[in-house]
Image (spheres, one colour):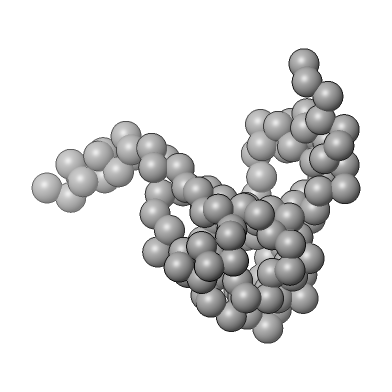
Length: 120
């Protein structure tokens, strides 16, 4: 296993911490890489900005990250959308700041198909 101890000062924020709580699997992966995410439940720019402005990485489920929020990030390197799509993230603003935006395009594919069939 690689030595990940250099990430101990890497500040990770996990948004939607109450609404979409971290699974044990997610917690184990963070711990395995010496990451200790700061769990935040905030949904408006005035409540989000003070909690994330100095983070290195953001993991987000559903909170919108508009340009004003992204502009407040002083050292963020990655925003990871824990689901499909990036429509609530201002990708253009993130790109201008050199922030990588990722998502999980295969999230809930079977569930979406089942739901579609149920609606027919």
